[in-house]
Length: 291
Image (cartoon, rainbow, N blue to C red; front, side, top):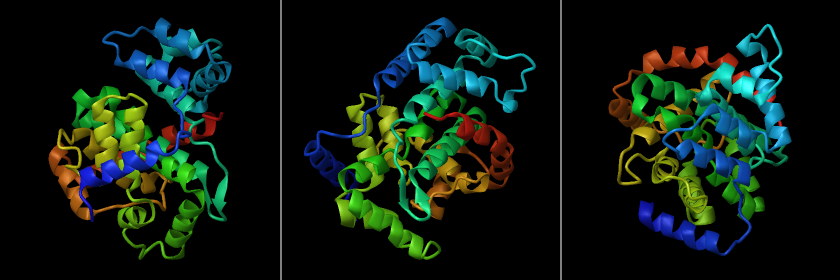
């Protein structure tokens, strides 16, 4: 297979030919900018969220969901922020904004683009939980990186819709003995979703750590830097099937999983029960984050 940099260069060249690519949106961009500030207040986040009526409604819907068990209705974004805290609200608001990027219908009888969205939510939640326990210095960005890790699939779907559907169908015919997804993508598109994801996040002007994690979440070392975030996402990806969010578009590697565990100093047997405990939270996010 070609090297990381040659695939990245191919992804860059291919995407330059197509001006219409998935857009992050102004509200999500503002949220990410606020997140990057050293100090962000609940009031500042609430003001950004309130500029989008649908987003504000979704934040309140999640705050009032059974998962959070409130006896009184949360009637304002300000109250939701105070109740749940900046970190939780930031993640909910960002996820709600990004749900619009994951629009699309049924591609095959068994695969709907909503499966990719649920998988991304699950990986985001799991990445955040893993960071809390094994890499607290990276927790601020863990949820966001997990949420964005598979955006490269949206690039492939946007640029080559027929070929992308054919790829899904091929994987569906033999899910247990499926060929190497990353190699299939390179053969079909010239690069794989992790490469396209890196380029897209760079175009969205996201931090280098985000881009490196998107590129390295199947192949550690691809970004020639700190692999902590990529390791968190890689393990969350492996755990996602256990919380009802598997993805047929997957490229799991036992060797990469072992490497990620070593980087984080984690034990796989202790991670699986943790993932199961997050099932209710993931279900609540999936049910309430509707565009």
